[in-house]
Length: 183
Image (cartoon, rainbow, N blue to C red; front, side, top):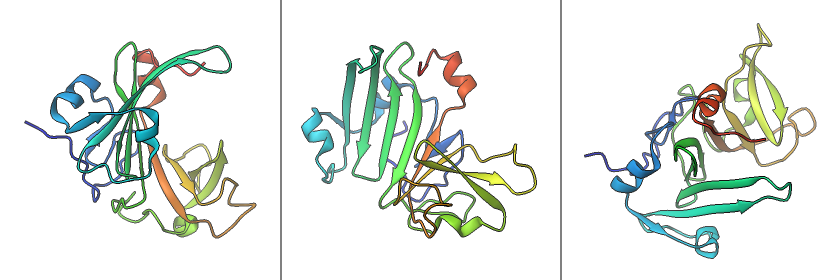
């Protein structure tokens, strides 16, 4: 039986996994094998140690644009957040790693590294507060992972940024196949 305890040294694999947890995991399977506690907003957002438990919260309602949302978020300390769709499939579509996460992207890029560490191989794109690695040889090829930094600005505007998080997501085609939509 697999227990869902995050491995803070696990590799970060775009479109696949982080913390030793794979994208596409069923929420029900996760709850069955994960030490967890259902919490409210106040406890979920309190910056504290989750004491060896996943703090789980269910977000459901209507946003300011009138779109209904249904999702689950599961937090392990401030190091790992799992994002599950609430309907229809209750499937893991996103993993955010930050703070004390020691795993790496390509065995080289880690939390607290300079954003430009791989500048000899990649250019940096910026969209919606996140950075993306773009192949220097072919601008149509990019690494499908979002990199958050200590600034909400492009590297072009603010150089010397430090990596604060990596966001691994399910491929868009898979999200669509599972009925996960953002419009």
